[in-house]
Amino acid sequence: MPDLGTNNLDAFWMPFTPNRRFKAQPRMLSSAKDMNYKTPDGREILDATSGLWCVNAGHDRPRIREAIQKQAAEMDYAPCFNMGHPLAFAFASRLAEITPKGLDHIFFTSSGSESVDTALKIALAYQRARGKGTKTRLIGRERGYHGVNFGGISVGGIVNNRKVFGTLLGGVDHLPHTHLPAVNAFSRGQPEHGANLADELERIVALHGAETIAAVIVEPVAGSTGVILPPKGYLEKLRAITRKHGILLIFDEVITGFGRLGAPFAAQYFNVLPDMMTTAKGLTNGVIPMGAVLTTAEVHDAFMTGPDHMIELFHGYTYSGNPIASAAGIATLETYREEALFERAAAIAPYWEEALHALKGLPHVIDIRNMGLIGAVELEPIAGEPTRRAFNAFLAAFDKGILIRTTGDIIAMSPPLIVTKPQIDELIGTLAGVLKTLA
Image 1: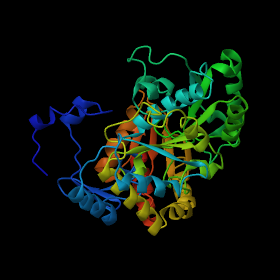
Image 2: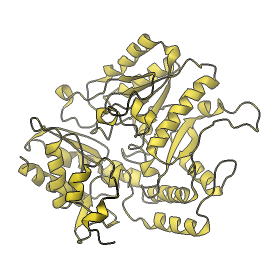
Image 3: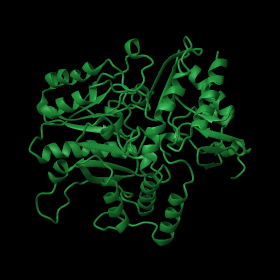
Image 4: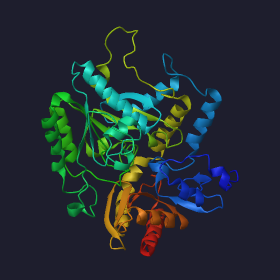
């Protein structure tokens, strides 16, 4: 790793980072292996966030590394506009083997943000293709996160991600979020209360008319906003209402996909089948940027009409189905399968839950919630200084050798699926020590 003086930090405008604070006191990672990062001075940092919700199989997995090296030497790039290469088709076929039954048509993108905007465009074009061209309205959810492109922030509901970027897309409305701490605090798994919030979709339908609404997009488990869980029966109600009114249901599974809940996808975990799903992150174990949109045959086939020499969907990306990304994706799926990592996550999830909830009663902890290998510890904000207490916890945790993630005053954790019980003990024990010292 090159030596980094202060001047070397100036050129990179960092994403979602207080740049001036970071560059005054940088936190650098120089290598990674299995469950740990290593800093330039040789300290090990236990990764409690799977990088950024994406390194589900752990770091530096040999099969994935070797697949990338082999493919780079064979063919670095090939276009997928009117051309093809075998790996993109092979990867799509392999992916379809683990997707929920019925979601077996796959459109490749380069990221979760691109996947979301792709799904929204497909939804609008689908409604038009089936003669429902008045269905142009999109429904998101408060506190939802669907990436950072204009479609994603329009249907998203995190205020700071939206407020400085103008009027965004028109024709968008939002469901209420499902975070009800007054009745659901310290829930283990799905909360008991709040399924009725899905009925707000009926109010929105009555307000705008079903004939104007193309799609509803939600995260089955909202991650980036601080781990908000779906109440029991909530997703089932959304599915029933959307189906009743001819509205597409899109699950954003960029975070929940690829074993995070102990099943390949949240749709299987909750046994609720959407019309489309967006994915990325764990698709390639975070190694190479790639995303995918999964659709039903009904959605896909609506486009397969007209002259066969005409493009059915005027949409795509330079890197759709990239050869090296496809190789990484196939090797990632093989790693998940060979090591039974989805099943492993399901087996260790109860231990994770018990360890996480042992933090109840520590200073400033006002809520704990979990599902699969996801966990959140919500802290009471410092009066007049929202986000500072959790950010202080993040800094102290890094100094003590664990990497956590914070959003607002919520600590969010999502360790790689290879995490062991002793590593969970180390993580939660270190976090407990941090929480005890917070002002």
